[in-house]
Length: 113
Image: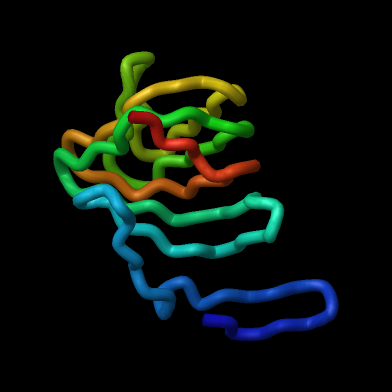
């Protein structure tokens, strides 16, 4: 929901943007910014125990954990911490206790079989 828009800026009332379910159970998102090129900024909310299945990062992915814990085989990123992933990296991510993450993507993830 746009609060204010000028030539230079767009202000969003994030509390009025609905959580949208994704294709992955227990994972929802709010789109804050998106370009036709695929670049996007999302708020991602994962319920306790939710998993993002095996996927490839086509571009750099940046994740700032606002609440909870985001985990993969490399480690855990907890509240107030940040992780970025290199293009081409493949992993599965999950949240044992649930989390809210600000995610910035150069390109959408490619989910793998």
